Amino acid sequence: MKREEKASISIIKIICISIILILISGIGVMAVNLNLNDVKIVLENGYEMTVLTSKTKVSEILKENNIVLDEDQKTIPDLESEISSEETIKITDKSYNEVQIAKISEEGVQTSLNQLLESYAPITEKIIVEQVAIPYETVTKNSTGTTTNTTNKVLQNGQDGLKEITYKVKYQNDVEIEKTVISEVILKEPVDKIVRVQQKVTSRSMSLPRTASNSSSQAGATTYKITAYCPCSKCCGKTNGRTASGTKATAGRTVAASSKFAFGTKLNIGGHIYTVEDRGGAIKGNKIDIFVNSHAEALRWGVRYLPVSVVN
Ligand SMILES: [Zn+2]
Image (cartoon, rainbow, N blue to C red; front, side, top):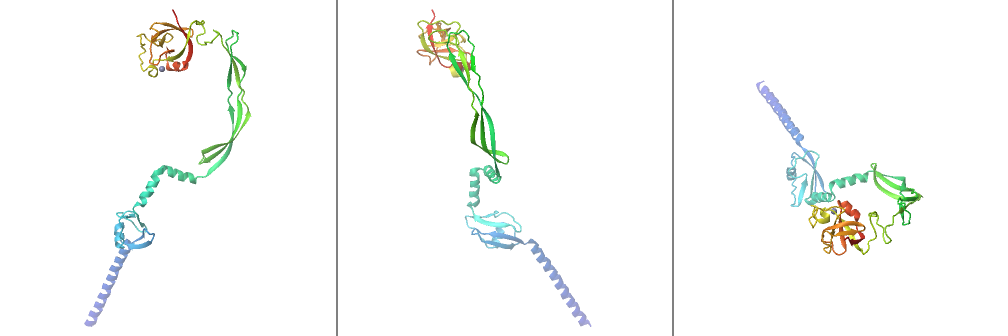
């Protein structure tokens, strides 16, 4: 009885220990199983392998699988990265990604993205017909007749013409991206406006619209090239408005002439009396510069050829 008891106890003990061992090892296997990762490794030559690993760091996974990188190779993600199950480690040439980035930055990431989007958005075309007015032109006819009527007379009223333009318009994302003229048809020709301009004749040789009132024919006059200047830096490089003779430059009086005219000389220029008060580097020979108040006025004056004579 005692021996049998002892034997049965030892059997129970063995069974218990076995069960405990099985449980422990089972738990152990389960624990290991929980930490195993299913990782795909793609080699540079395209060969793919799937490995089971308990490691999560890329460098360790490679080491575990006896994969050694060449000097010019790298991994995506990099060696220090932690990865989880079902992710892929790609072994590639070091220049791989850099080349790609360089290609993108050449065109600009934004542009290439837009281009990509654009190329996927559908393009729609429409034919559009527009009627556009053709503005009439005004034609002036100078009349130097003997009439004293100085108002302009409209000989023919102007009328706008009309044309029909057919466009082909391309839209993408409701935005017009291209507009091409297919045809242009004139429906109505414009009619010119014809104006007869009456000019009062002041002398046989020339007409002087600006100074018509007090002019008389200038005996012994010489034709000068008359320009205009203002106090601005473009015209004279100085802005204090003082003339070379020390007077204050005054529009309607001051002119710049060459030194053959003394300061104070009165000149009849195209029927208007001016006083020589200024000089200018470019004012030589038969040139006279008339002082005006604004640069716009100087530009409006332009270049005129007018008779000039000294007033005694
Ligand atoms: Zn000016």
